[in-house]
Image (tube, rainbow, N blue to C red; front, side, top):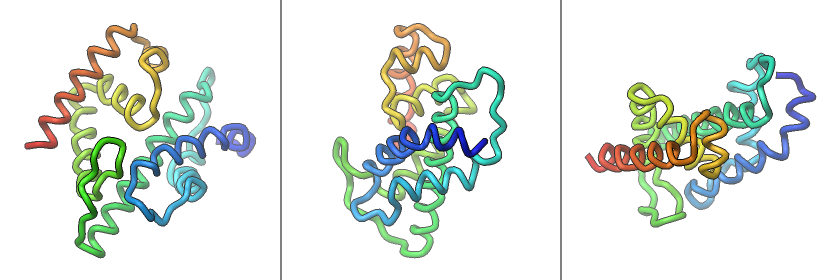
Length: 161
C-alpha cells in the first residue's frame, strides 16, 4: 500500500483502532497509534491496491489486521502472566481469554459462513450500520439483519459451550 494512501486513511484508521481499544482491558499498553502502526507492519504495507478497491475496503482490511494484532498480544500476555481480568458487562472490556475464544469462534464461523463472519466483523468490530454493512457485502438490509442475528446466536452458543 502506498504511503500516500496511508496518509489519506490515517485519521480513519486511528478512529477504528480507538474503537477496538475501547473494548480492551483498562490500562492497555497500546494506543491507537501503536495499533495502526502494528497493522501496517503486519499486513497493510504488503497489500497491493486493486483497481476499484475503496477506502472502506482498505479500512476493513486494516481492522482485521488490528484485531489479529490484539489477539496475538492477548495470547502473549496470557502466556506470560497466566492471569485474567474482571468479567465485562455490556460495553466493557473483553477478558483476554474471551478475546481469544471469540477470535477462534470467528475463524470457525468464517469457514462455515464467510458472509456471516464478515457481517459480524463489520458490525461488531467496526461499528458499521446495517446499511453500510449491506453495501460492503452486497446484501439488502433485511438480509444483513437476518445474518447478523443468526451469527450472534451461533457465536453465543459457541462461546458458552
